[in-house]
Amino acid sequence: MVLEASMIIVDNSEASRNGDYVPSRWEAQADAVNLIFSAKTGANPESSVGLMSMGGSTPEILTTLTTDIGKVLDGLHRTKIKGTSHFSTGINVAALALKHRQNKSQKQRIVLFTCSPIEEEEKDLVKLSKRMKKNGISVDIIAFGELGDETTRKLEKFSEACQSAEGSYLAIIQPSSNLLSDSLITTPILGGDASSGGAGASNAGGEGGDSGGNSFEFGVDPSVDPELALALRMSYEEEKARQEKEKKSKEAADGKSELESVAEGDEKQPLLDDQGKASGSKDKKDDDKMDTA
Image 1 (cartoon, helix red, strand yellow):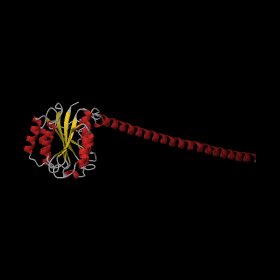
Image 2 (cartoon, one colour):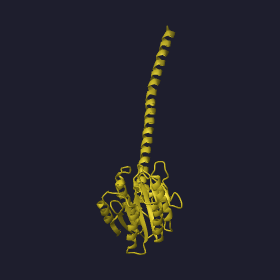
Image 3 (cartoon, helix red, strand yellow):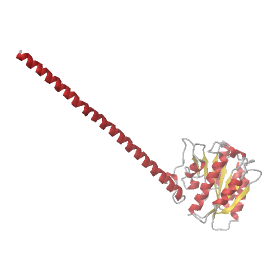
Image 4 (cartoon, one colour):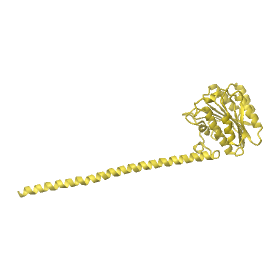
């Protein structure tokens, strides 16, 4: 599998307080960060992941590149929600952190969460994107929240300009009852298939929308997250067994009811026959008495 150094940028601006994602935008990001870390290090144990925030007064590196999930979770715990997001500055700081990675054979990738408006001009974003491509840095963007048309267009242009052999993807996660991490599983960022070509953009999680499905059972690549794939398989088998058991119980109950109704009918029938025979015998005796007279 690909050996990568990945910097995850979380959006801890005031917009992340919104509760349109379960349980909130910020907590949904924290859950997804955990999933991404597991996917990256599970694919290759020598891959490393770092964490930084782009909200507040300025972007901040929370955890340098590491293979220890505890350090990443500690960085999330220390993060405060405040201020506005700094999209371009955050990417530049992440690129600088990747440049100083210890293992130079690692491919460079930035995974950025954004749920707030982007203030930068489109031309400046395209220029930044091309510089990332020139430096061999792939940029995956996870856009969620109430995105305006202008913000969506800027993100699409950025992703288009950053395309490389390693792939840079834009995943637009629409609000739904699903967890952000669950919707993220079906995107190319975690091994799914892109729902469109050039820009690598995909829509996921929206009610009635395209989930960007993939060829893996339950939407999970076992080579990326074997534990999750196994858990989903076991859950599926348990549910299937439960349904079969209920079906058999229902059929047995229905069959028992039919037998009881048949048995009741058989028990009553002899009584009617006996009564009929008794009545016939009585009529015959009466006829004999009349003949004798």
